[in-house]
Image (cartoon, rainbow over all chains, first blue to last red; front, top):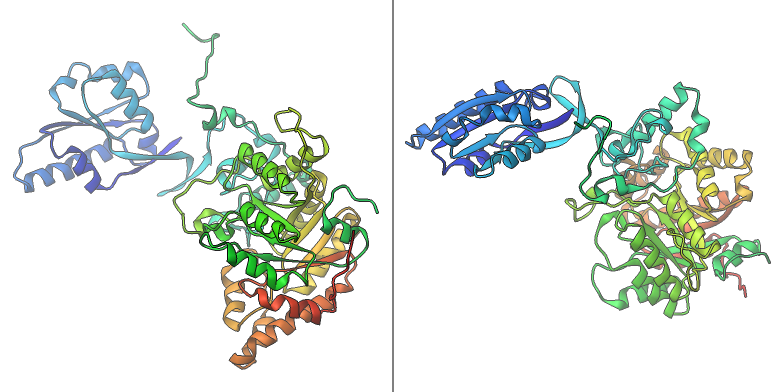
Length: 222
Length: 310
């Protein structure tokens, strides 16, 4: 899923303080799972903002709504009838949702309420970690199912580097060395010999480097 | 003598000599004298001089510019190049730039993570990794082509090196990793600083078991300790560094004013021991901001005078 984290309340206040009518718009997908932008977080943020404006002696209308998804036209249509009632929408969706909402409601300011962080998984309650950088050309078949592009701080394809120590990365004792994980996994699979196959220079044109990307599927297009 | 490049370092190895290299870190400024002075201190006692490339991710004068200074002194630089800061366009371009000054040695590295340095918020590139950089230089040299396939007019003629850390984890992959670098085309290896001699010798044994010492020249990395504080720092703070307790204890048991001398003694003793370790083809002395001690270390280790080669 796409993992997001809450923005500091001070930053959010700074971005919405001039508005009198605000809709906080949550998303029921990834940001709900990572507890940054679902219905619950919309409610908490709405309460915090109401309290802030009350203390400031300002009369600001703050409404709450959470859509099934903000990255789909269909669900974004649900607010079409009410969007004009607001001076701004504070979206707690990921960056995709914020942009898709902005594209659809061209004359309404759409502000981000979360920082979109990475593609990852819930490792345990309250801990999300990165697993994928969407490089567009998956090599997991060669690396024991563990991704060095997203999990090695130097995205080494033929690692580990000399900074791997006791299973941890040189940047932090909290970060696993991806290549230690790869080696352990190759060993468990009885495929340690495969480590010595040199991974060729990667074609990064399917990555961010190639410019904004698109997937075109004529077989499913309407 | 069977050599592939005009590199003096390659000739030293090919003639069967124990090679000696050391390194100069470029300055945190544009003063050309600093690198020249450092090179002057060591020039008679080494065969070639590594020039570090923004080591520990701290911004310094460019490795290539400092290499040119050293080359213009009539000395033999080894251009260190990390894949952290440049993509494949810049790497190939700088290789050509170095080749235009007849810099004949390159050491291919991935580089420390930028979070160690003075620009922690910067991007890192890692378009290639260190092995792929080795492949790239060899391809440019041997095929005379750019990665894009076009022909290079006057290709680089560089002796290609890589680093190895026998002490990083996982240990069982350390020899296969070296084998991989050899497959990619590495011709010489400079190792991480060696303090744990037993572990290094075990690594060398595994290297010999696979015959890798006959395919690549391995230079043992040596860094003299200046003080017990440095030993503790290296032991506890530097990732992938293996400093045994007895080294720390030996310096602890030495009066403060004699610790530097003792550190040099430890270094020279290690070199004496490793001279008889089969497969060790040379020494790379990394006397960090202590270049003036390199001549003494080389002399005490019985590696002076340096041989002359054509």
